Length: 79
Image 1 (tube, one colour):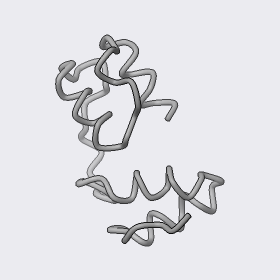
Image 2 (cartoon, helix red, strand yellow; image 1 turned 60 degrees about the vertical axis):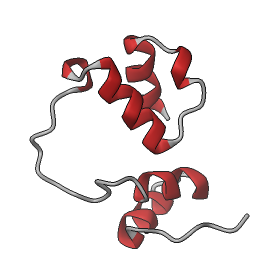
Image 3 (cartoon, rainbow, N blue to C red; image 1 turned 90 degrees about the vertical axis):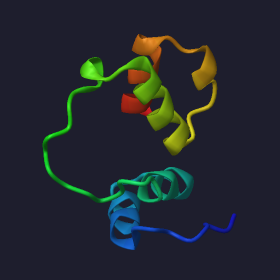
Image 4 (tube, rainbow, N blue to C red; image 1 turned 135 degrees about the horizontal axis):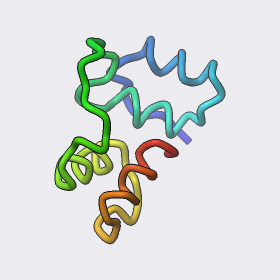
């Protein structure tokens, strides 16, 4: 499988070195905020369900439209 253009090549390579699949590494490295640091993000529990849904959409989580807030959090943390 060919990998699409990677927005954050450094992050992609780091994820691959950690053992992530090519597809998962590409999804993460291509999210709009890929590689941005700051440490000021709220924990997922403080996010609204709609924000969690949008993040799940950004990283390509299947079945997100049928998930409740707890399931979205779990999927984001374990995807």
